[in-house]
Amino acid sequence: MRAIGLLPAVLASLILTCAVHAQEASAIVRFYDGKFSMGSSKTGTFKVVAEIEVLGESGAPASVFVENTDSYISLSSFSGSVSYKGKVLTKITKSDLSVRSLSSGLAEDNLAYYYSPSAPYPYTVKYEYTMSYRKGVAFFPTFMPVSDEKVSIENATYSIEVPKGTEIQYYASQSSPSSETKGGTDTYIWKVSDFKGFVSEHQMPSALEMVPFVFAAPKDFMYGGTTGSQRTWNDVGKWLNSLQTSSDDLPEDFKATLKEMTRDCRTTFDKVSVLYKFLREKTRYVSIQYGIGGYVPFPASTVLSTGFGDCKALSNFLRSALAAVDVPSDYFILNTERKESLPGIVTFGLMNHVMLSVPLPERNDTLWVECTNPVYPLGYRHSGVAGHEVVLIGEGGGQVKTVPSYPDSLSRQSQKTVVTLDDKGGASISGHRDMYLDRAEPYIGFGELSTDAQIRRLTSAMKIHPDNVTVTGIGDNFGEYLEKGKDFCPHVWLDYTMSTTVYANADGSRIFLPFNPVAQGMTFQRGTRVNDLVITGGMSNEDVVEVKIPAGYKVESIPEPVELHTAWGDFVASASQKGSDTVLTKVSYTFRPARIPKENYDQFRSFARAVNRAFESKIVLARE
Image 1 (tube, rainbow, N blue to C red):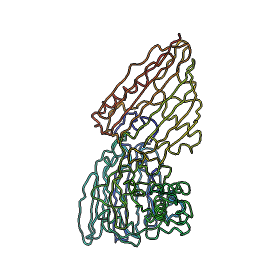
Image 2 (tube, one colour; image 1 turned 90 degrees about the horizontal axis):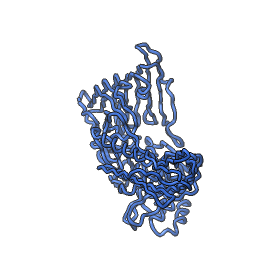
Image 3 (cartoon, rainbow, N blue to C red; image 1 turned 90 degrees about the vertical axis):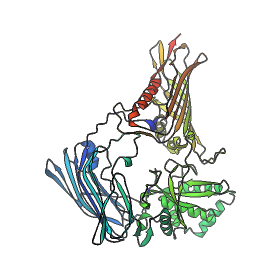
Image 4 (tube, one colour; image 1 turned 120 degrees about the horizontal axis):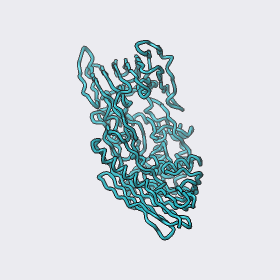
């Protein structure tokens, strides 16, 4: 399982690639045959034969070979070739593959094998290899013959052969299997032919809607000398809980230290805050595979002595530390990339992360604690967990819960900018920026960045490129509990000053001011949209820019106000004169979750063009 890792621009989540997408294939999977044969509950082999024709540079990623191994799965055989116009240019053996470790620290043979062909286009690559499974089969290899855009499939087949009577479960995106029983085996076969590929576009639906794939697993399994069931999430929880019997082994003297650290704490939340701070200051995340395929957290005492761990280990360490001060908590598993479980299949192999759940009885609430990235405010339900189905792991088994989402109204940013303009178009600028919820995520830890990195991040949402930027203050209210409700929400504010010689264009008699230089406009596709456009989360933004005009100048013209309203978004912009020496501009955006059919993309394009016209308008100052 791995740790999870938004852009600061106001409209970054709505920017679309400005390009016309051709739908011609860049590579073709001429043939793919993957056969998994389960010899017993402990062993299996996965034999793959594949042939991919790469038509141009953009199709090259489809021909790359990558397979991961560990102490449970090995690459037992490999051969291949690269051909051009029917002539074999290169024969590939296992010794030609690049190999690198996938984990650090206490690892168990966790490796990645990699090969990237190099040949004139169009070339054809063929691979034939076998992955050998030992010590158990808890889930079958994923079938996904295409994961890159503009890659078509002529013929692909995936089969799973299991001992007769072995019950399996699966989720298949685009096809149902045929099945047959011969002798002592049951075989399930999926076939894909004439798949035309997909085009990648920003804010498109999940690729799982686009590509053929199969996730499958046995309902009962043996793994690493243990047996378990995946008939329900409760069963999965029982098995995972059984792996943790020896992981809570903090030494007694350290437990006494923890009790002393929390002696003055009056509430559960106070205790968690103290120990979460300890986790932040004394540990770090390191990817580690340890015990029974990497599903056993290594002992809490090891985290204490080494200062590092993966998501399982760090969550287990905090759980053990909380238990030492009489605070119960639950370890839970989730998929950070997908909110809902796939129907028809229950397996821990589909989860990629571990976190901690801590009940707060005094608040009738629950803390959802991210242990791998404790710079997050305590209890903040970040974008990889909010709204996700998770499985709490306890002695009674697994319990499915949905982590509460935040109201869209909390995802917001506001900015007040004061500009003192000179008569040559230069300016000194001061600003105050407030960011909340996921809008704050890119700025969590901002104070630890180098000056150059701070400048890049601060100006990434602006049109202007200042000659120099000085950040004069940074503050946060991480961990603050909002009194008005039960939501933990990060709030980052930044004060900054900057100067630039290119704020406005001056020609001696007039100065042309940008309408709003602290936010970028929207980009959009000028060609035909291939996929629906998905706005996954709501958000809002407000910018106020106050420009002090130089002596000897007056306002000659101001753009007309703009007001746009759609089912999925609103935009309002206006400019006005404030006194004799100040121009004030205001811009506000609101976007709501929506799925806009590709046939209606013109509506989005028209909206974006109108927004850009507003941003591109100028305020004209004339010399008196």
